[in-house]
Length: 180
Image 1 (tube, rainbow, N blue to C red):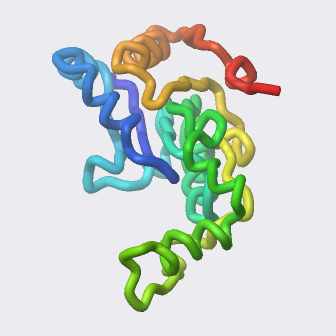
Image 2 (spheres, one colour):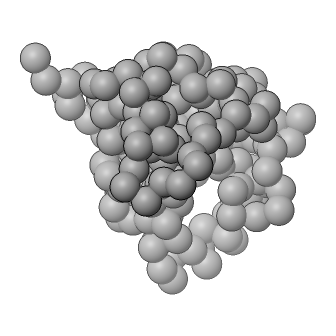
C-alpha cells in the first residue's frame, strides 16, 4: 500500500515544489512508494477528507485563505511538513512586515511606474491580507521544518525518504535561523 501525500502552496513562489520535481530520476522511486492525493501541480487541490500520512506546505501565511488551507491540511494529515524559508519563518514574503500591508499593497497596485488606473484586488477567493506575514507554525502545529530558499532537491529527497522509512529526519530547527 502506498503512503498518501498531499502538498499545497501558500504565499510564495512555488520554488519548493520545483525543487521537489528536481529530484530527477528519483521521482520514479518516489512514485512507486507514494500516492500524491492532491497538489497545486495537479487538478486535485484539496487533501482527501479521509486524510493522508504526510502533508507538505510551502509558502508563508499572508492572508485568510492561507490560514484556511493550512488548517485543512493540518486536520487531514498525520505529519505536517513546512518546506522552504517562507513556510518555516515567513521568508521573503515577510519583508512586507517592514512596511505594513497597506503600504505594500498601495505600492504594488497603485504606485508602480507602469500602473494605469490601478486597483487593489479584493476577492473572497484571494482571502483578506493579514497585518503580519508568518511561518506556518504560527497558525498550526508543524511536525518537521525543512528550511531553504528553496531547499535543495537532495534535502527534500532525504526528508521524504526518512519519513517513508518511519523516521523523523534530523534537520536544523527554525530557531537555528533566527537572528537577534
